[in-house]
Amino acid sequence: MTVLVTGGAGYIGSHTVLALAEARASVVVIDNLSTGFSSALPEGVPLFIGDAADENLVEGVIAQHGVTSIIHFAGSVVVPDSVRDPLDYYRNNTMTTRNLLNAAVKCGVSRFIFSSTAAVYGNPDQMPVTETAPTRPLSPYGSSKLMTEIMLHDVATAHGMNYVVLRYFNVAGADPQARIGLQTVGATHLLKIAVEAATGQRAKIDVYGTDYPTPDGSCIRDFIHVSDLAQAHLSALDYLRMGGASVTLNCGYGRGYSVRDTIEAVRRAAGRNFAVQESGRRPGDIMTMIADTSRIQQTLDWTPHFDDLDTIARHALAWEEKLLAARGPDAQAATA
Image 1 (cartoon, helix red, strand yellow):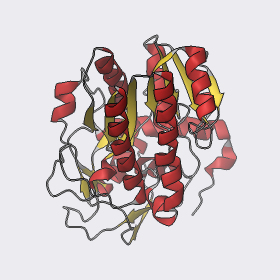
Image 2 (cartoon, rainbow, N blue to C red):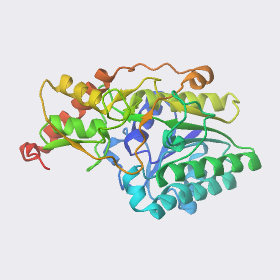
Image 3 (spheres, rainbow, N blue to C red):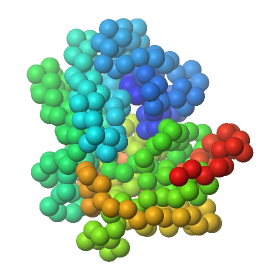
């Protein structure tokens, strides 16, 4: 009953591995450590350093550890990067999953949880957005994830696999005990950038687009705490183990906060101000994205515990301060 977690040393993956370990599940990780950190894994969790697209590696790990379920995180996630280099995203996200699924099918793995994204919806016609809304991605990132969803559906239908697709909205925060968090250098997550500005590591934070038809002119996002999202994966795994049918689920809280709201939450958490610079809109950015969470609440035994923007900001800041202290005084110098 071992769970293979690809990308398990990354941001969301490591929080899910921690949750699995705390639940005393048998878990093994494959990660190439391009954006992940072995130090983020709990002691005793086996780590195989390599690519989830390497079918020989995956098949060997499945056989060696008796893997019966896969949670697939490995992939690229930066929307502007995908616009600049779409082929890289189709390789890392879509083609990698194709190879992983092929290995899973050959080894008889029957349960698969896929880390997808609300970016598959593009700019929805109605808000909050349901899982049945039209999928019209605005970026190669969103398209690469949607292609993977389609491929997973087809493979599962052909080979008797059951799956859960989790469409993440905006993931943020860190482990409440500050054991792990987002530590990727150059991360583009809004809250990460804001807490870096609040701790003096950035000279400013940019607000991309201030002329959207929203209450304050900035984009609106549905933030979900990374630890709540990790628990959603465990609940999805339990659902599949109990014979649940394949399903696609939004992962959010069903409420929206603007970019400016988010910056103010970090200012409150830090008790200090930092510079904000207004910039133009970016290609691929979505104006408003809020989840309809009816289906996930009805399908999974999952109750969020950190559904509060100020709490998310406090946890992100506590983790950032811990990182900063570990790096020493030289890290205090602000950069542009």
